[in-house]
Image 1 (cartoon, one colour):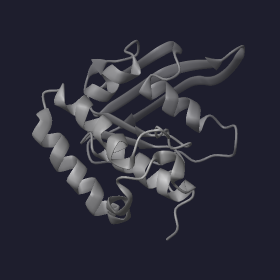
Image 2 (cartoon, rainbow, N blue to C red; image 1 turned 90 degrees about the vertical axis):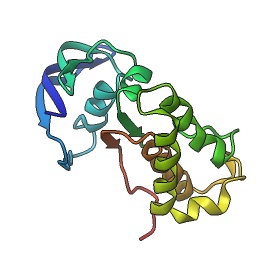
Image 3 (cartoon, rainbow, N blue to C red; image 1 turned 30 degrees about the vertical axis):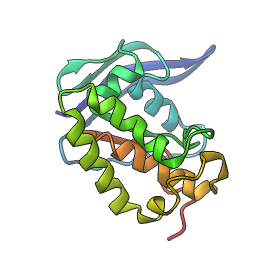
Image 4 (cartoon, rainbow, N blue to C red; image 1 turned 60 degrees about the vertical axis):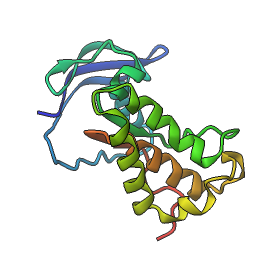
Length: 172
């Protein structure tokens, strides 16, 4: 099993948002979380990625308990994440934003070559991104920021890709 979430309880301040959430994702599966605003979709994503601490329960990735690991260690293990707000660094160029994933992957067992290959693949999926590599993130439209965010997550060559509001701001 790629990802196992067992009886997870997560709070935002005093509010108990996730109550006993359990789910599994196998290799090669595509899973969508749907629900109304405030249903907890972003909270479960942030719990899986380590951005929001889990009060109780367990999260396993490829059989390893990652419940208490910080976000950067989860990313090194192969969890890619493109947040709803894009999460790009506005003062960095698009090329530098994409390099962040390569710097992280260079420190993993996958090595630098995987980072280069994954970045090239990401640019194949989003060829428009290649046209504004030297542009600072703050000069991008919302849709361009979303493309860069997803391309950056892809450049890590993750085993698990988590996209929050994946197509928000993207034109068909």
